[in-house]
Image 1 (cartoon, rainbow, N blue to C red):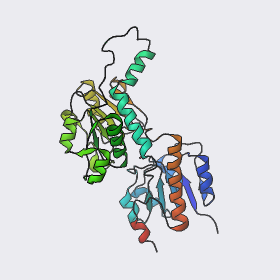
Image 2: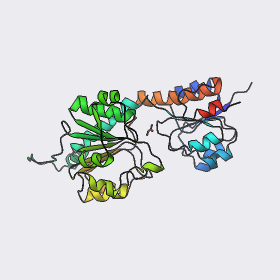
Image 3: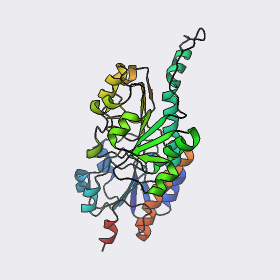
Image 4: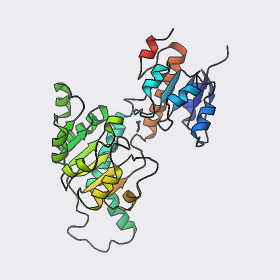
Length: 329
Ligand code: GLV
């Protein structure tokens, strides 16, 4: 029997491709060529499964062109590149890559918080530019992390990891806001108190965004929300571009209406709002919060195991629309 066809849209670890090749006829993209949407649709013809990375948009229009498709496996925990309703309607399974990146991503969120609060990249640029001539008492004075109030918007697994780091590692007071309140045991384990969004904005010294992107979280932080923050506060976004109104944030940073920001994700990335690029009080990183090799390998393996589990046994590991499984003939 001929093997099912699977497309891997971006370059990934050769050992993951080799594992997929044990089960499928794999078309991969080892040179990591940028495919246009039309090229992606062309490559997807006849494919039963596709391994995506978060950059490939899977929507109704694409699905209509790919009638043989049965599964899209995202190598990302976020899946705002998927129209899950359209996938369910067409009987296409969607999977993401949760859990394996939680601690790595929480580490990075905390690193970005610290780099922002302590002005690490701004001061490094100063030093590299040869401007450091002598010590002065207030040179690059930042804000304390230990003992400060850590606010978290979006208290899923990664948010909880950041809360634990703040509470146990740095003696921070942790407050959070989420669509639904956590149970008492989880709040206790994170030493985190539930507050309204307004209270979160007003009282956080460092506000970390970890909520999923959707139409309802678009510009969850815009000019009106930033205006409620303390002038000494820092805003950290490791969630998704589009959750913050980057133009409004750039204006607030320029006018010092808040102290600083640390951003790993951007509206329209890899493009970055040009004003952000010129400001000293923002730390900018290119969407690397989950980027350690062991974690990226675990994410790639999970996406591959979803393809293998579903297409060989009907058993994916992390389905997003399990209704597709029960609806199957
Ligand atoms: C990264 O942004 C992810 O969603 O895994």
